[in-house]
Length: 276
Ligand code: PLP
Image (cartoon, rainbow, N blue to C red; front, side, top):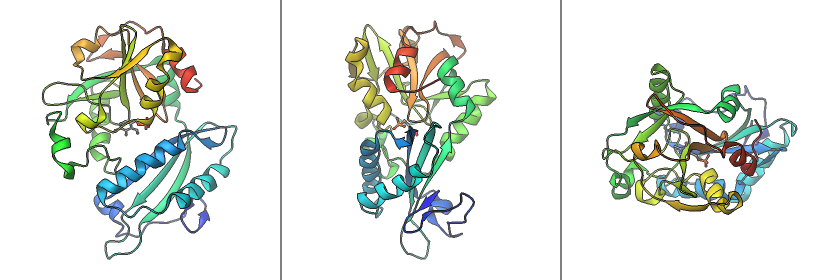
């Protein structure tokens, strides 16, 4: 772990005050990056998104150079031979006022994530209860911001586990697929690699999905963004949940209905640079 202004400290070092608004209110933002060969992948894209999140929360994010230094310190303390994740966090700081709290941690990739790359995941759909356009029209819903308020995301995953599934695909009230609690939806249909449009829906603009779609021609595909319903996903040539830590996990069943294995999962993971 590294703390802004202090550098690398032992991971068990206490660094938050009891009245830190990140802990009290979930009032803060974060980014999670993939650590490969000891370096964070897509660092620029993650820092750009963090700065958009900060603007949405009116949070005084430290200058980019200070964040880069913090990330560099954290990455340098990680064994480059081990694949990992790097989380960069900025909370609003003490309730009584004061500077934002900023730290970064490095962590090992969980065995369940590696298994998901190899074997795929069972996914159940769950409604978020609001229409596709709700978040764009209501800035206080913080659409598109990566905030530390992930209690709903984690509750969704526990609910999925109760149904015997590993993942959730959130739906709008009209029944359109949005995203997963920690991943972006990508699907292949008629040689086009699709994802859900982030601006129109208020989902998080995934850095991994963006990179993958920008490189779709390397797989022989075109790329596009549109809304989709789960029934249409059932007929797709491949459906994946993609994110910085997992790379890509193929959706092997949706609401209990098995899907045929996609031909492209290994190629996707190779292109993205993730091992199994
Ligand atoms: N959507 C949500 C809600 C997420 O939390 C994440 C990542 O954690 C993603 C999508 C995928 O984003 P990225 O590819 O930038 O990791």
